[in-house]
Image 1 (tube, chains in turn red, brown):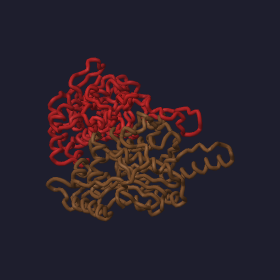
Image 2: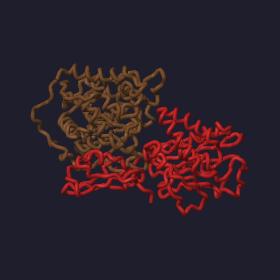
Image 3: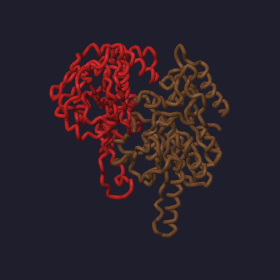
Image 4: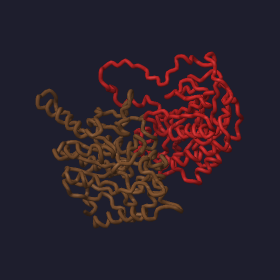
Length: 299
Length: 313
């Protein structure tokens, strides 16, 4: 058997760590495993990917990005509405998602569990790497709970977490592990036949599209056009101004790192949500506490 | 070296005088809650539309990431060590064009924008040369105290006790054992016309410093305290709060040097313990708790106390 898993989430959520935990747990279980994160200018909140390949002894000779995964792990349910994480997923592929309820429109078999709520309860923060890794290990029938727990300890120790936080992550992983069923027993499955996959033959390990430039220089001719980059999609929390409390002191305007707060001539502030990354500095600094926080809910 | 009590001729009296124009547009790829981004946004507001920005590798190289640019101003991307050398080229190029009467003097300002990696380490030589030649330019270093763009490796701007990906906390190590390099004094030794430290929690102070510098010719240099939530492992929402704590605890002195004469533009009278500042960032978390390092904490506090004693306010 050989399983290719692609993880989708946002920078800071633990996408890379989740991949590492799955891979280490599989290794401890006696499988061959490798993992790698997407390399690029990722930032906290930006969409990020990581990749895990597992086999039960067959050497893993592939490297690079996974274009046609057997399973997807979505650490953030809003990624479903935003990008197309299902790209290249095999027709019999499994979707494992951190969400309270299963979105009914999936064309693929899926497993859902609200890791975020469990993490907020157990860890006091929305840090879902151990929980998401546990969902994958269980749903795909990859590892025992012991290998998973040990992998969580190893990887969380590696990133320098305090011992008591590591144990709480193990607790989160165990809760998630026991909360979902094993959907497919990949461990005993054979390689899928070519007819099961989406154009396996054209798979490229790293896809670098050829772009035709107008000028032989690396220049960006338009200045200040990054508004088109919808960084509002990074937002995990949304600031809302209560205008009945606002005194137009413009503190929020001065401190917004991204120039996302604009002022009317009478100094009434407006938040521009297309690009607001949800850093919440405005809410922290507002002297009147007139800016509240909404947890961004996926569409 | 007393605080400057004389009345200053300035357009910036309160935060409400912050210019409304935006030269940094929304949608940059920088992290949510980036402190350095606030610094460059305010700096560009003070310097205005005729500023030509020179950027080098570092987080803010991402301000122009194909196919987007976040800066309204013209921007040149130079090699890591060469920001001030590229600025010299722009200044000379404009001067020659004006001398040849090929263009009317545009009255432009050249701003080199680098992180602490380029300012304290990799580009120090080019900066030394440029200040020595008296190049008429601005330099803004957003100092987030490590190589933030590549995964938070230690730089010579990393403070004592900070864990970074290359100064990990182990049984035998309490993070970075070296002291932060004193770039202010190194730059000052070159006799630039203007040199200042700035912090975004004091925006009026910051705007005034850029305003003052823009009335002078020669090298005008700024070191901006830049909270880095990703590398410092702090909460993005607390960026300005942490910045304020750095100023109030005395960790980040606000000062300027005008033709070699140093003045502190804000004196933190109460100076709460540095713990108040350090505890906001998980890069220092190993200093606290049962197995924390009392010794390192005392060393950090002692350095801060010694600094404020030495300036005899």
